[in-house]
Image (cartoon, rainbow, N blue to C red):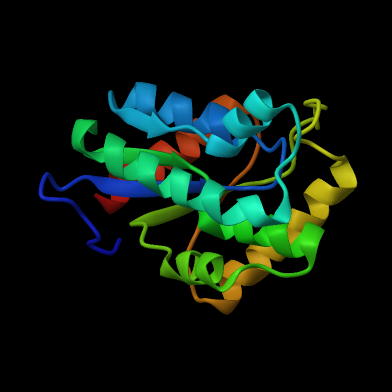
Length: 179
């Protein structure tokens, strides 16, 4: 693991994945297991509050808010901060839906300053979630783009598969081994 840590030696772990792939459940379960905090996905809150999906010009705001919430929650973390998504996912979806991203979002996406990256496989049942989730086909496309992007950028990641308990075991084993 890299050493992108705070003064308290908190390691930031990002959980990436396409829609309806279990990121939030995994982040919450890991935080519970390690008795720490996690950063929920701001996009979910945005969609619920606005009752619509974000517009192209709102993507940067969403990414910045996500990062700000990481910064705010970091001091309260106990060794680990589990982050449900990152600017990389926001940029991937922006490219998918809008065919482009603002330069500032691209800069944020390229930072990727996490100590470890987890990717949730799209192998659990897809569940419609109102406005935020489109289809199992889109989920597969985004997953493929995510893995390709991580590989192109030489960002190591752990692909977790199976149900929540199995994913939890995979991550706990890996984090305990690496720490």
